[in-house]
Length: 191
Length: 92
Image (cartoon, rainbow over all chains, first blue to last red; front, top):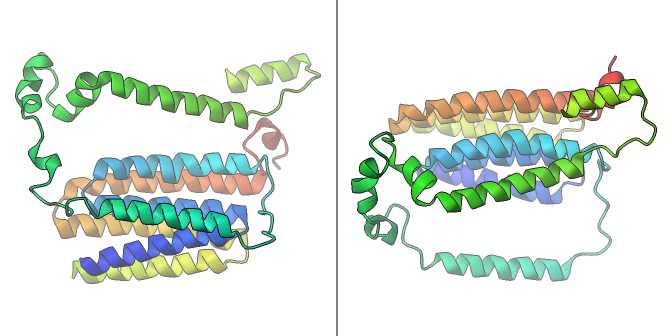
């Protein structure tokens, strides 16, 4: 299956370069959709189906629609670049090398002696059923929603705020002259 | 056998990617994206059976739904030009 992994990673890299290079924003949105599909397949190969679920729902579904809605408010062509951007390229290369350098210390994929497999407190699995009054058989759910509930609440708040901000940006500017029919239509569509 | 099947699906994905890059019109690209989504669903199915974890097949279902919804949104946008109320009035 190594050939499959190499093929998927090569396709991912090609799509990323295409997104960066293409000037037509419409096509760029489509390439981000393709990238999401590929990324989700890659997550599935890495045995992370929950991340793949999220990537499929958010990346390929919602974000494509949001990007298109943004395109409706802007132009469809990116402005041509006058001169070759040297400084941003340097910054990206330095940041990328720092990230790659950071991965050198990480344990190998699937290593059973990795800290994430050895340092886990077994108390969660033992006490979960008692703490949840025996009503929640899924330990992952009890950790997410109860043991680190405040963390999840914070994440949800961040996502909720981001959603409100996106809605505010994508909202049509309010019309000055409003007659009765238009007002009803607005209520119906936004209420 | 599963490896050959997934590799051939990946080659088809690459061809769809090339069409999406070259595609002169919007509809070439829409078709390429749709085909890419379908091939992703197929790839997930083949991979599930290859690794013996058929419970991941739910993902393939979700992907086909997402593909359909995204495609409807794309085509609606390319026909109307916006998702707002004005667009519905301008619809033929």
